[in-house]
Length: 113
Image (cartoon, rainbow, N blue to C red; front, side, top):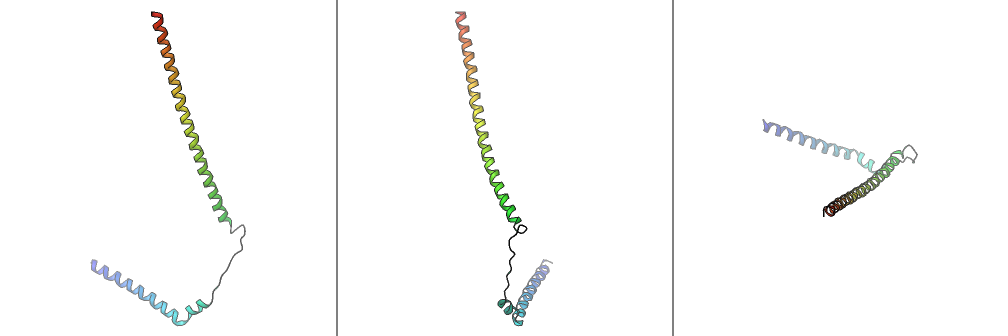
């Protein structure tokens, strides 16, 4: 069963290869390939707002992407500054609380004595 499928696929592949080869030889025999080599044609549409719209959109998208990256960098820097400031204020608040506690203990110790 598997052998039959292999034979069928091999036959189809060889047939397709031969057909494309024969078609190429026929084109060369009729001289169409030679004629196509001699004649060439080119065309151009002058730029106008309609056919340059895609280019303008891509440029605008690139600008917006660049601005978005810059804003994300600034936002990240701002977040870091806020975080460092919060940590610094937290440390200062803890030191102030410890200072008040130690002053309270010191005054309480002097009153008893």
